[in-house]
Image 1 (cartoon, rainbow, N blue to C red):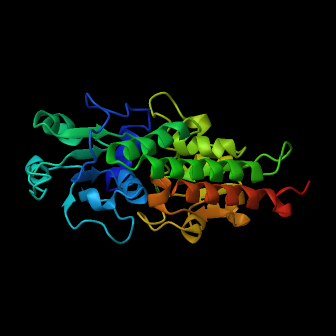
Image 2 (image 1 turned 90 degrees about the horizontal axis):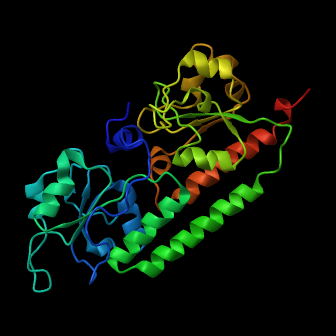
Image 3 (image 1 turned 30 degrees about the horizontal axis):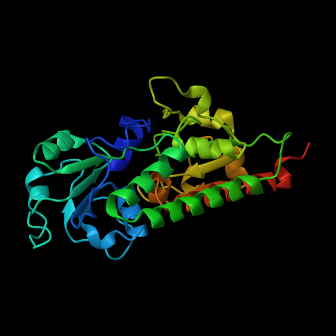
Length: 306
């Protein structure tokens, strides 16, 4: 399983829609000069919209952009109130060592309540359940940091990319593209009710996890090797290539998988774990990868011979 915030967000929170704001006031009277991001997705967005210079600390999992991240790190799964409260440099324009704004995606150890009680603005941006929710969070970060225009531009670009990808998939009423999306090597997957699942659904595929998903798993069922083999998916996406070093060769070595269509015809697509688990400005890259995989299956004449 994942050993980071990624699994906590995906399984514990279930990618359900969370309130975009958990503080009394959403707006910011002036642009904050000391921001802490305890969300890798928020970190990516903040830098993309031009708020990088305002960020004084990020969580341990934030690794993008690859340059320019602050040296100060906070463990988002075990956050230190003392460290957060004292991390900002006191200046004439910012006389306090407390941050102006803290963004979280997971309320570990009631950090939200603890910081709010000390007069620090905390915004909880949980994983969105829909594309509109993702867009809303990007726009919100723009409004909070004084970069609303750039945030709106990124949202517009993402909408265009996703719409173009969906439109590029040829109609295939007689071709059933079955898909298995792997979150980790223990066969956790995602159904169409989740955020990424909805992206797959928009491409006209049949998600094999749907049949095994129940109300108790929030759209993230744990499948079995036997079930995946029996479902015989034509396409496999691996969202565990970095965390768990899974690739097509490793999948092919699993018992029974050498007969699975996706393995036989080489339609096993490795994704970047980080991009696949975040809902920020690189969302278009994930959609491009998903679309390319689906189109590759549809174009493979060997799969559709009668």
